Length: 446
Ligand code: ADP
Ligand code: MG
Image 1 (cartoon, protein in one colour):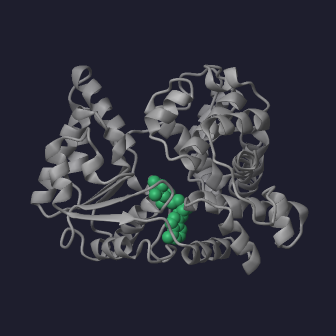
Image 2 (tube, rainbow, N blue to C red):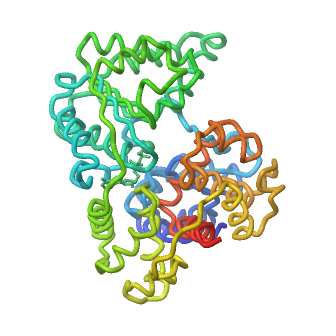
Image 3 (cartoon, helix red, strand yellow):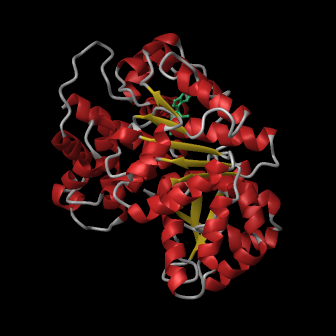
């Protein structure tokens, strides 16, 4: 599994070489080993705490610059030392991390393809970005996975930050918000009230607050309460609030009634799955961003065998682009069919079952069903498990809780974590995108 990190790291290391003096480079930077990607940061293993300390003290800015300028979708680096407390990897690095770190600059209104399935929500998002707090408050965006909610939310944030830099904008996920809330509760009991005050001030002194994926708060009343208070304060001061979820507000049954009423008092806009023309337009746009030209018959082929998830559609395109780079061949229908291991002809897909996904994952990653659904923490198995979870979410219309049960009785937050982790990796990592697509085509062929 490490070789894909290696490819990314090679590109980054080249950049770093130009930024760091040669002696420090060969002593400290060159020996680093890429071991993971966490929160869009590459995790680099140093040989000792001493080395890690030197890098942290003297070279972090250069490393960050190298990562960003390598333009591989990553935003920074984390230095890690095996067995060290100080240089351990924390999945949620700094709870109060700045919004800008979470924002992907590629998610703009310009790069969002508008079709009949999303033109209403697009217009609403644009209007909110132009006049925050004035027109639709709160704006509640909902739709299935991979249909562009996060893209639109971040487009709003990016646009406001660019056009009205004096406004304080916070984009965060419900999961981060929850973590910060929990952190602030713990510190309240222990080392003073600092963290609680910071939490409160952070969310009460903003002009625009965007919270992604609030279905994650299901049943978590403490955090809903905290948000309710922040919401009321912001709302009464005409500050803009934008929320996204995978279902309509009224279906969030474990959401406090008064919050639900608040949401329903604003504008509720849904994103529908794109039609074929929109899917093709999206693919064209994504190919263009990567500076690839994809012939029309290949676009039609990519769309034909796809489901409604734009993220996986993009994954199919990435697989084909990767194959084209690998074999140094232009993109053609036969290259695409081979890369995706799909027949060009029209055959009827069988009904997809959880079992088919588990079988295909086990055979692709060469692991047993017991390991896949069990507690084994070996990295390859954890990755296979995450891919399997991702595909369950992606290919089956099952509730997250059910997916958790099928995956060996896991919590629904574990399911969300695995799903988002793979989605994130697929964006920056052609190898993982290919793994996922291979398993997926195997499922469709069973
Ligand atoms: P969601 O948050 O709804 O699960 P995302 O916003 O993460 O979905 O979208 C998944 C991927 O699909 C992203 O890479 C996004 O850029 C892309 N995407 C979705 N809809 C569109 C669209 N209409 N135009 C361009 N890209 C899109
Ligand atoms: Mg999202």
